Length: 445
Ligand SMILES: Cc1cc2nc3c(=O)[nH]c(=O)nc-3n(C[C@H](O)[C@H](O)[C@H](O)COP(=O)(O)OP(=O)(O)OC[C@H]3O[C@@H](n4cnc5c(N)ncnc54)[C@H](O)[C@@H]3O)c2cc1C
Figure 1 (cartoon, rainbow, N blue to C red):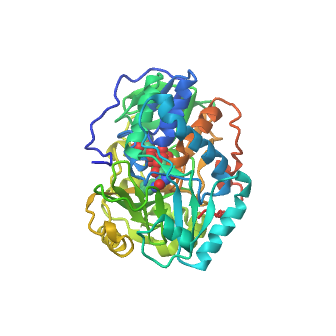
Figure 2: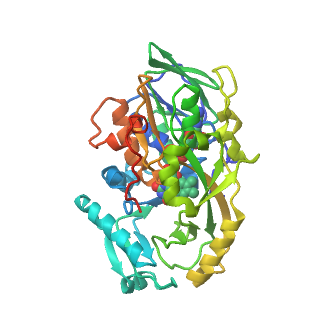
Figure 3: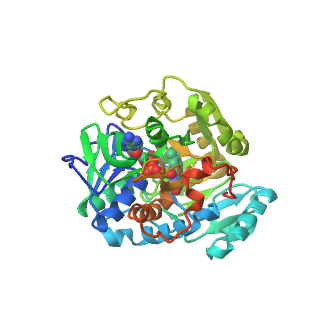
C-alpha cells in the first residue's frame, strides 16, 4: 500500500501542549516543511493533523519536483525548494526518494511546441537548464515511446521524490527537532482577543499560541468560512495508478497530451491522465463561479463536471457551521480518500498499450485518487490573514505544491517570524481576490 488512509496506523501521537509559539493546522507537505524549519530555529511548534500525516494530497500526488512549466512567479521559490530537496537526506539522515532524472514534456503539435518556446522566453532570467528538443532528440531520449512527436521540452535538473515516504520522514525530522506532531487531532476553531489570535481549539482541547498557520489543503476554505473569512478555493478529483516494477523506458518524468508517467524508486511507474480531473458541483462552485470562470474556460475539455452524490467528497463542501464545543466536519472525514475513476484506469491501460508497448502488460498494483485544491489563478496563497492578527495561510497550491513544498515551508517560517523571506510574495497575497485585481491565468504549461 502506497497511499496513506484511515487504515494506516497512527504513528504521531502524544500529549497536547498547553501553549506553544506556533500552531500549524494540517500535516501535508506545507505544514510539515514549515514545522521543520520553525523547530530548527528553536520555535516551539504544535502541528495538528485531523487524520494522518500526508494522508491527503501530499501522499497522493505524482511526486514530480519540477521547475519546468511553472508560472514565473513561483520559480525563485521553486529553485530554492530544489536546493532544499537536494540536501534534505544529508540534513536529516532520512530517505526522501529524491532523484534528479529530468522532466520531459512531449509535443504532438506545432502549437504545443510554440507554447514551450514562449514559456522558455518568459523564464530566461531564471537561468534554468530547460531546453527545446527536436523530434530526433525526443526519440533518442525515449526510444520506447510510440507517437509522432514534433519535439519536446526537457529540464534535466528537475526530478522526483516519493511522496508517501518523504512527508512522514520530514515530519519525523521536525519531531526530532522538538516539534509536537499529533495525528487524529482536528483543529476546530480559533480564539482571538482584540483581533489577535490567542489559541487554537482542537478536538483534544485548547492550545494557547501567538501565531497559527493554516495549511489545511482542500479544507482551508471551510475552516476560514467558519471564522467568517471568504477564500475562493475549489477542488478537483484526479485518479492515479502505479504499476509493478518493470523494464526501464525512461528514468525521469514524462508527459504527452494524453498521459503522464514517472519512474518510481521501487522500479514501477506512477501514471495518470494529463490534466484530466472531475469537479463535483456544490454550493461552493456557485459561490465562486465568476472567480473560477477563466480557469474553467481554459480547462473545460479536461474537466468533467459531476453532481455531488453521497460520496466522501461531500464532506468538503458542507454548508454547516460549528463552534469549539461541537464535532467539526474535519473529524468526520479523517482522510479524504475518494474512489479512483474506473474509466480513467481503462484509458490509462489503453495509453500504455498504444504508446509504451513494453509496459502494456505491466499490472496496476494500486490505484487511488486525491482532491486537488485550486485557486482561481492557479497560484498558491502564502500570506498573513489580515482580519486576524497572527493568522497565516499557505494553501491553494493548485496541483503543484509537492515540489515547491520545502521552499514554501521555509518562506512561511520566515513570514511567521516577521523576517524578510527573500522572495516577492505579492503574487501570492490573499487580497488579490478581493482588491479588484483581474484573475490572471499565468503562462504555466
Ligand atoms: C493526484 C495528484 C497529483 C499531484 N501531482 C503533483 C506533482 O507531481 N507535483 C507537485 O508538486 N504537486 C502535485 N500535486 C499537488 C500536491 O500534492 C499538493 O499541492 C500538495 O500536496 C499540497 O500540500 P498541502 O500541505 O497544502 O495539502 P495536503 O497535503 O492536502 O494537506 C493538508 C492537510 O491538512 C489536514 N487538515 C485540514 N483541515 C484540518 C483541520 N481543521 N485540522 C487538522 N488537520 C486538518 C488534512 O487532513 C491534510 O492532511 C498533486 C496532487 C494530486 C492530488
